[in-house]
Image (spheres, rainbow, N blue to C red):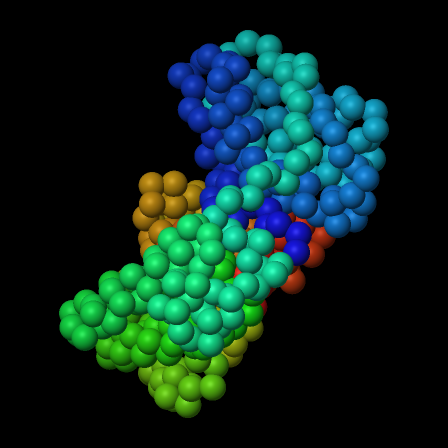
Amino acid sequence: MERRQSLTFVACLACLAMVACEPQAPPGREPSHDEVMQAMKKHRRAMQGCVAQQRKRDPSVTGTLEIGFTIEPSGQVGKVDILSQKHRGSYVAGCISYIVKSMRFPPFDGPPKRIERFPLRLSPGAAGKDTLEQTRQAPDEATRLYLEGDLDAAIAAASESRSRVFLARIKRLYEKGLTLASDPKELERAAVMFEQARKMDRRFAPEPGAFRKKIDKELARCLVTLGTDALARDDPKTRSILDRALECDPQSDQIRALLEKLSARAEQILAEARTLEKTDPARAEEKLTTVLRWAHEGEALFDLATERLRSQPGRDGGSSSGEAGKTAKEIRTEGIEAQKHGRFLEAIAKYRRAYALDPSDTDLLRFMGAAYAQKGERATAYEYYKRYVKACPECPYAPAIRQILKDYEDWTR
């Protein structure tokens, strides 16, 4: 099996979503060579997505892509030139050119800064040695035992020390999760342990096995309890918790019943928001934001909450301002700043508000996917990435996002 690209699901959009967040130079000075290098490195994973797509389209396009570009005094990147003749007109050249043009630097005084030649080796990156791809290609006795659910026997039968260490790590995470799950106050930590064990299982086992089902069962049990408690508190995270639970146990009637209760409660909250719109607009907006967190785009509740949010005082559509006189673009900028500093819930809330004001800004779907990915809510991030690709299939970032989606699908298969 072809080795996995170093482009990972969780980390990739940390580069893609932060297009406007380049290294800061002192005011009035042009970016130094080191600052240009840092900016390029920050977008390396996105560029690897371009390379991965090129390899699918035409694997013969290899070598070193050389580009030249100009940084304008405004901080924007102007003209990008493809210097290596053999790469001109290729998909990867156009994709990387767009990423470079999207970079932003602090404004500076003086003439434009020209980067005469910047080489980029067209390599997908080295896969980590602990991915155990050899085990994926040819399942051995340890793998067979593991798939049958006999973890201790699998550890004893492992012929390589790496496999033994890997399996022992899965066992420790699983047993730690069981211990924590016995204490209602430690359910969140237990879910983290099972999530980590689940991730390692998918890296080791070539196909779903008995032990993976054990992990999924325990994780779903934790998430159902957490989701039930979250629903009782009207916690905005309730939907993402239950979505994760359903991912672990798609046949669970209990989880589907909780999702139905969630929808019914969302309708009640929406009605409450309507009654508060004139007397307490801030509280009404908070409730509408909760409904937006509980509904997926395309669902009736999402559309209704979006419409009510737009109709609030001070809002008149995509280019209008919010209650503090802020435009959708300003709210989006605040979201990017919050995401840069690790305040992911705040960033997501701001992206949702901005998107409710301006649904034409499809990049907000990508930003929300990135924020959820960085929070560790991979299933929710996956849904937002899918929406982005569907809403903007020809956008320059779409190929890199499709690669992220494929990585996630490979990881969860």
